Length: 253
Image 1 (cartoon, one colour):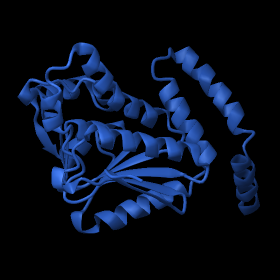
Image 2: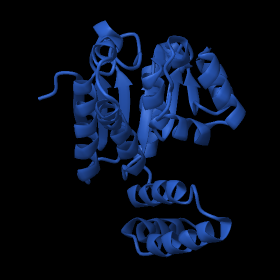
Image 3: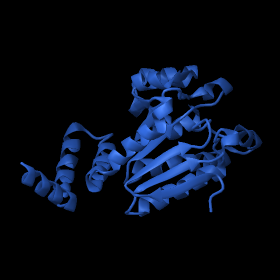
Image 4: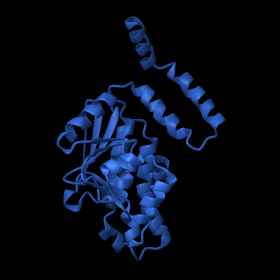
């Protein structure tokens, strides 16, 4: 039973909803643990084809629960590292997850909340959504998400967001390459559902192999990346999805 999130799976689509609207869905240790549990459950469930993360109420997520951060002020460095690693484990679980993860963002996605969205494979935003890393304004650092952010947008844009703490609108985030699609506020839920349903209808094996290879080649040389592509190409040829897809295509042509 979850106390901080809502979690359901229907027709191959798993939905993780941060459910602390009174706290703008701030991330406390319990919330982080429950997100991790839901990610593990969806990764193990072969019926899940896509995971959607969203927030209850007006905002996606305001970031870390600062009251809890303040209370831990007397902890030593090792205790702080253990605490930080819990969020890091969520980011890694999202990267390693066999299915695509979509962040559907309404309202504000700030600090760790923006990090959670950035860690998703795709971000769908309502036109009034806002994104930013304002940690610098309180002397903090958006440290763990930096590895993901600099892979999502240019180095100079990442530096700008991390050091100015500027909060940007959804369209600017899209222009920067941080957001994939921006939908009108009034049709956001319908547009997200259409996008997610269309993605869920694609070949599960092809998407899983694509995600794995895309992130696997991140730090490789060109030659090693090509060789990894050869291996995945060969694996894809053995899947039932390809056999069915080829048969359907050839019958049509």
